[in-house]
Image (cartoon, rainbow, N blue to C red; front, side, top):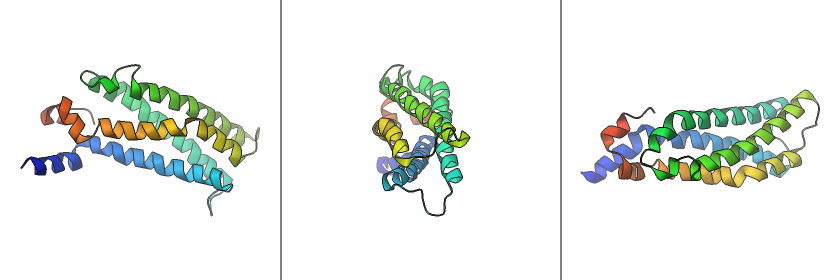
Length: 163
């Protein structure tokens, strides 16, 4: 019975959607970074479309982290050390956002014609925060996994969380 409950909670709990969002961020990062590593944008994608994809990545990740920091992390921090201010996950957010700001500035310069898009330069910017981003995506999914959540919260409490 417990094994069945575990499977149901793992698959159906709202926190399982975190993996969905994180997979989207991973896929977009891989597309952008892959273009940089290969020295050419994806086939069939214009420079404008490529820059739009990069802008959307930044915007969506900023929004995702903003929602977490304002609405989710404060609730989780009551019982879960990883979500307390100045600890791992919030510190990672700050480091990621420093990289996102540099990326957004570069994309803006490319959009306005102040700079030409140079994939090697974009790769350097992405290299500065890529490792922490990937670690963060994995750490957060682990912390919000059903098994770990059950350590701190009852199923009833999890169901009442704003997700």
